[in-house]
Image 1 (cartoon, rainbow, N blue to C red):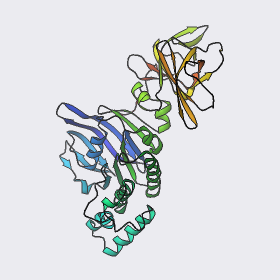
Image 2 (cartoon, rainbow, N blue to C red):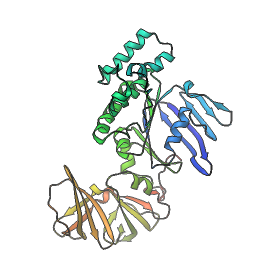
Image 3 (spheres, helix red, strand yellow):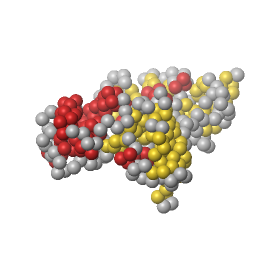
Image 4 (spheres, one colour):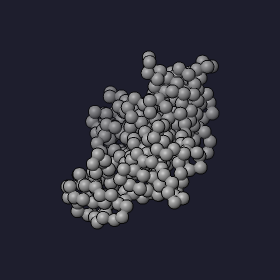
Length: 374
């Protein structure tokens, strides 16, 4: 695999707001990279810069080994010359054109013959389960069907890079799930390098081969979905990724009888290594906390505050004085409001963060966080 899209020191400001702040990262050929972050973090500005719709203030963009933007050299290749195709949040279909014409529009611009265009459009309609809809106008289609037309238009021209700006945000929850599967299959079949923008972490974690987490114009972490979830590089990433939210507990690292312990107000957890800072934040995912119905040594007592059933699992909110924790429970156990339970945390699954910087602490690195990009 080789770098297919390269972003070098990319910076873009709108007045006093810095939408992109010296971004550096690469996307490999055939990768499905998702730009994830809250509204205003710069992900759409980055995508539009790659597409050629925005002119950054500084930096360079390389696509397939070709420099398509350089502020220093004054290079600005227009969108049509970059070898990219884009699907917009609003679908951007021509309302006066039928489905056939919308899908074949790019092929006509490429001077493809009418017969070849018709064959290509028919094949795409069949592949996307839209047989018989070619003579309809966009207004006669459902939201999901309009989305498929936008995807078919992109696929028709076979660009080496797919750009997608929150294409599923206008669909209902069930249709979004179906379209995620469609998009993953399309990516698998086409092999196109894909950059996908979303603020929906479920989309990011289920579709991406790599996730680029952004905040205020900077990259917070780049990694595979499992890495982003299990080893967030900062407290921001830990709190932003994961539903329900991660549990954070201020703790103090102490040595006792030659062993390291992490002492919170409620728990005393063994640690495999001693962090360079004595004051840390312990982060535990809801599925890494176990509810006990009977007291056990070392398991503090909590009260059930709320039970939120979610089909095969339930989210349990628990309180002890000012502390609130959330547990993901897959066992079928009956819990009542204000019932006493006892909790145990799996120490092998926790992460430690520097209380001051909020960065992940790792063993053997003198407490320095493993932070990628930015």
